[in-house]
Length: 136
Ligand SMILES: [Zn+2]
Image 1: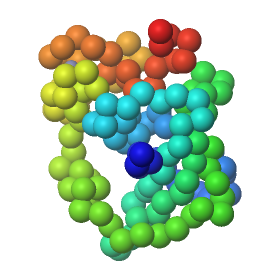
Image 2 (image 1 turned 90 degrees about the vertical axis):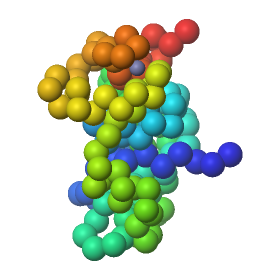
Image 3 (image 1 turned 120 degrees about the horizontal axis):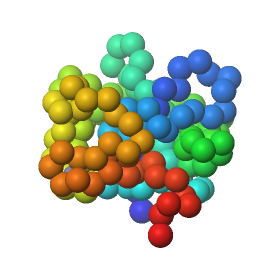
Image 4 (image 1 turned 90 degrees about the horizontal axis):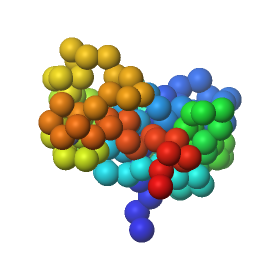
């Protein structure tokens, strides 16, 4: 099984943990139709200057009411940009976890909150980062 690549802000190395609840992470998880679960293997990436991307291996962890990735410090590496991430950075989009509709234009005009619902299908926009206790 391929390990999912999820955007996260890995700038400021020294931390061994990065949040997976910011917009970029949520966008990647929703596009892949992936809901976080405890201990899930992940590759987190962040753009860097030039044409390289920073990557680190990590595991999803739910602590203090937030999802984050616990990173393996020795896994830090730089890889050539992949066309798919460059494309996403140039052309922002956000595909609904449930129906796949690109709701980015709508999100630009609305604040993304914990209970925000997709304007097309009514599903939770933050489905990918639901609290473990809410998932049945
Ligand atoms: Zn939807």
